[in-house]
Image 1 (cartoon, rainbow, N blue to C red):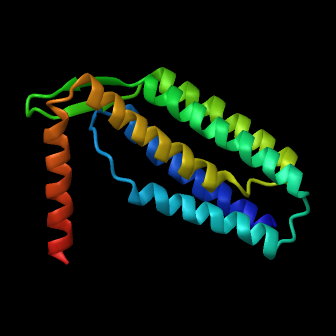
Image 2 (image 1 turned 135 degrees about the horizontal axis):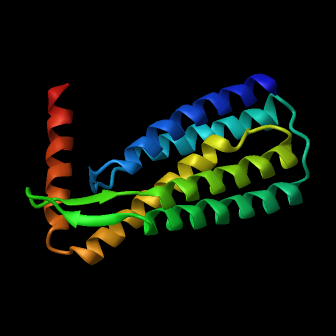
Length: 173
C-alpha cells in the first residue's frame, strides 16, 4: 500500500501545484472536461487497486460513508473556490477568470481535510486523485456557469475559441 500511497501523494502534489498556479493567474474561461475525467478515472483505478491488490480492509458501510462525505466535500470546496474567482471581459472580447488568496485558502483547507480523513479511513492517501478529479471537474463546471450568467453574450466567444482550438488540435495529428 505504501507504493500506491506515495504515488498518489506525488501525483496529487504535482497536480495541485500546476492547478493552483493556473487558478491564480488570469485565464480565458473554458469548459474542457477530458483532463479532469482522466484524473477521475486514474483516481478510481487507484482506489480499485487499493481494494484488489493492496487488500484495503474496510466495511461496505465505511466505504459508503466516506464516499458520500468525500463527494460532498469535493463539491462544496469546488463551489467555494469557483465562487472566489473574479470575472471580466478582456480587450479581445473573451471572458477571463482569476482566483485570489481565498481560492488558495479553500484549496488548503479542502485538501487538508480530505487528506486527514483519508489517513484516518484508509491509513493512506489512496483516494486523493479521485477527490482531485471530482473537485476540479465540479469547479470547472461552476466557473463556466458563473461566467455564462455574468456575461451571457461574451461567453459565446469563449466557446467559439475553444471549439476552434479543439478542431485545430484534431486536424494537426
